[in-house]
Length: 199
Image: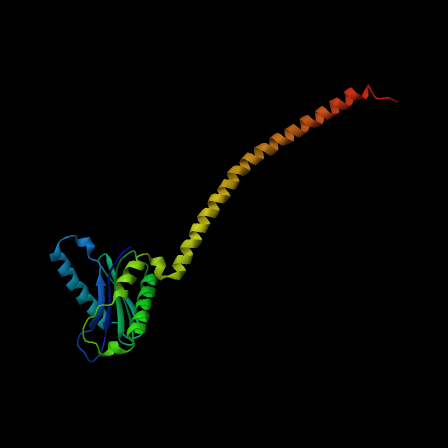
């Protein structure tokens, strides 16, 4: 699961194009070929602006393009857009975008409404790195993963008990045989000792 890019845009109906306020991208998949990187960066900007422009305030949407999904969340003209691979869970993606918008609004308040250019925002890189694991973005997914791990441990424990139980059954069987032998020994000893009893 991979996050290729995260962007924060201002979607003002009075301007023709959404303004990119902050962005971060991981284009390491293209290696050293700067030609491909610059083309892909242009593609990311074009798609992000297009999807952001077409996401109404208060709405979320996902658009699939080849092996990527582009997720957008618009809150009153402030829009977060994420480019993730197809395996990144949708709920985790929107949870991440929601958190990005919350932190952006805490950091900048309403000043973003007056911005007309991109500015460095270190949190976006931190979020991109931190939320590569979808469970970090989605607490329910994290809890589900922990439950699954507990279930696996529980199954292993139960399997261990069952395996041990089979051994216990064998011991119980032997124990019951020993018990019969003990009873026979006791009866035999009683008979032997009965001749020596004083009346």
